[in-house]
Length: 145
Ligand SMILES: [Fe+2]
Ligand SMILES: [Fe+2]
Image (cartoon, rainbow, N blue to C red; front, side, top):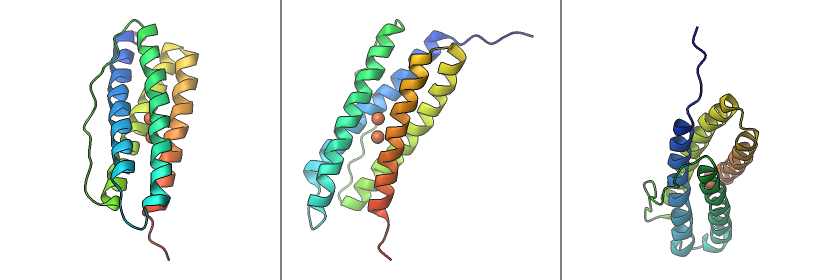
């Protein structure tokens, strides 16, 4: 039986894919916070600005870790989705959070295989924050009873 060794290149590639999603999230949340108009503007903009700052801190950790592993951090954003209405914006944000959570779960499994305790713990912490973003967006999107 061959014991599967985690390839560092694979971890770097996965982190770079996550990094592109973080860059896109910074732009998308910032854009949303500038653009939302109407009665919900004040309720939403502060929260979305704070999400953009959280994504910035995720971008910083992931970039520094890629360099520590011997890779080159991407500067390319993943797809940025900026629909016209606040509800469609938040739905696009929620879809992006779910995609980020799935990618980070895969990276946590790789970090475990690699035995990189810092990567595993730090990505778990980032993923917890993505869950808080996701849950906040779900509450904003929920219709009042
Ligand atoms: Fe993030
Ligand atoms: Fe997030």
